Image (cartoon, rainbow, N blue to C red; front, side, top):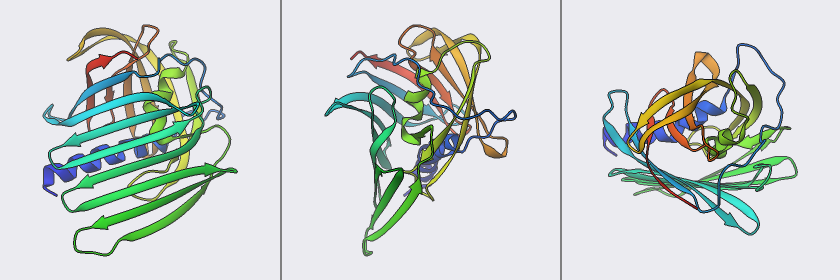
Length: 249
């Protein structure tokens, strides 16, 4: 994999892992965070992904589908060097996870990750296939605490909280389908203010949301102030997602 491809791979592959390991300056008790589901099934939003110099790294798509009475929340990131597809199957009302999957395809091989939630445990199987080498398999298990959501649902989950200035909430996040070691940790969210944000899709009024992570890491997401609460922009400290287009459900 070329160096630009590797950097994009690491940036996209790890951005939700960072968000998963949350830590707040003022610890809050964790709780279930979903208050209102703002989307319609079939919604698809497309993004351009930029580096810190505003150079284009790749593209991303978020999509919401219905599957056997559940919701499948999907993400697809790509550039010429790799393709990264992931999804989480969740309860349609609580967004608590049922299963997840991720497939990363690069120049030198494929990594497939399958996640199954059952009886308070998440079982994660990684299957790595590299050209010229034998297939490698690894299984990890994580206990699932109360108030926990899969990290792969984060960008969707954050749309469902009450958007009002200085609203704060904390929950547990399961970083399962990640390239490195699976883990669960605390996430703390804080709604900072309303402000205008300009992206390729236009200029919008947005709620600015702060996401706290360990080691002083701080990320920012902007969600529309209308009832759809769509993700307009997301800065994870490595890459920035900017909205290009919306396909209504």
